[in-house]
Length: 317
Ligand code: ADP
Ligand code: MG
Image 1 (cartoon, rainbow, N blue to C red):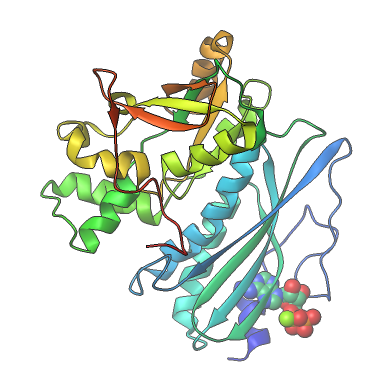
Image 2 (cartoon, rainbow, N blue to C red):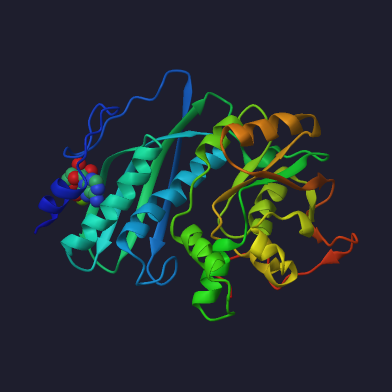
């Protein structure tokens, strides 16, 4: 199978919302009037972002999910995607599985694949996503204010738990917990609906991909403020909650969460709870923005806790 057959067979589903999709020299789209276009790209490399034996379907899902998560963090609706693939070989079954996972998630969020690039090389996947939000309304990292509440969506630490178990850093004896954690690692669900519902409510937002404290740190830096984060409030599953201290590293700094961390005025608490219910997504208040800089993680007694590392950084450690 050559490159063109591969694209025609697996990456050419209809794109009714684009003026021109896969097959020409460029795709053509027309953003909704009165909206700003949001653009973001993310790359996944074997051995660094995923284990070599992960199923192609999960990889197709995750390649798109990590990009949609960035749109969610802006409060944008995701609309179109470009897919760049470097493949060691044209393994048809593998490509079919990858496309299945990719398109299933795309369909769920009304995203259309309108083009890409395909080449032979060490397995590398990159998606560029285009989204839109009403003009001037995006959730930027630099808009947190002292006195804001800090919120997080969903559960934290599970993806990191699955990675650490896999690397044999520690053992997870609870099989149901491990299955749930692996599911979260391989099939993260981007919080697009919640993000859009937060547009008029939240001040600043970011998605948690490198670890809560690291990604919250980006908000703090961009906003010129500090934060206190309450370790005992970090949301996870009941099975994890029985041994919270042991998982604190995963919860606060593990990464691979693809949840949203955001800040909002205390007056918005009820509206944010309602937005979470409407989006069928747990939302938890985990701290507050203060004057100063950096985040302090506080234990139940109010004393600061320290972690080995605030989050994942590709060029250190
Ligand atoms: P070019 O030679 O201009 O780079 P290509 O031959 O790479 O064009 O691609 C032909 C068409 O197929 C283009 O419309 C391109 O966007 C699309 N395409 C290539 N790879 C992919 C892919 N992995 N997924 C979706 N569309 C793709
Ligand atoms: Mg090309």
